[in-house]
Length: 214
Image (cartoon, rainbow, N blue to C red; front, side, top):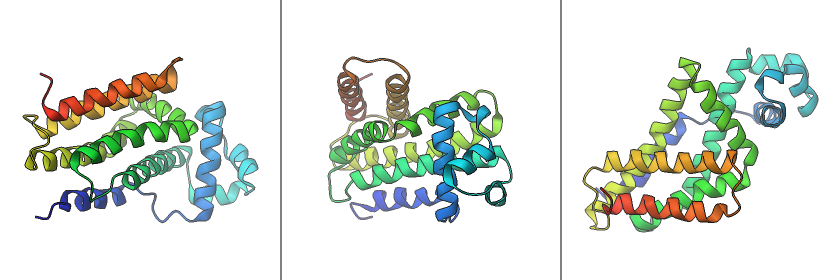
């Protein structure tokens, strides 16, 4: 197995959550939905308000998304796909596993800063996961892809003697949970110095991978 095979394998997994051949029209609808969801919430978002925002007819929107739930599902997948794209662009195959993990963490907080509306909807999605088993199932599938990417990076780092955690899968789960918690805190709370929270989270995650915590 080559040094960067873990990267190629984890990149392939992204195709599983990319919106199915989303053309320009579908993307325009989804992006209009994002703006509506972020400003007034899903309950007050209608086909009419989306149509008005993206300049399409209600019939065209219904053609691509036959229900509000289908539209919200695809919106969540689109947001997650965008996030993963940012992560992939930041992580370079030629970099060491330590640099890759550090870049992945940087990418998550860069995403929050660049796409605050996406983060708002992701927080809403977490709320719905507590109410609806279909949303919970979707979230489990999406989260597993990011967790596997982290695990693969840690495993590669262990082989190179960089990371020393006992269980790569367990460390990946803890790291992902820490990142998610920090993202939720930064998107739902007022922080005078958000950079400090980010740096503390990053240090903790790297320490977990290095096996420096119990």
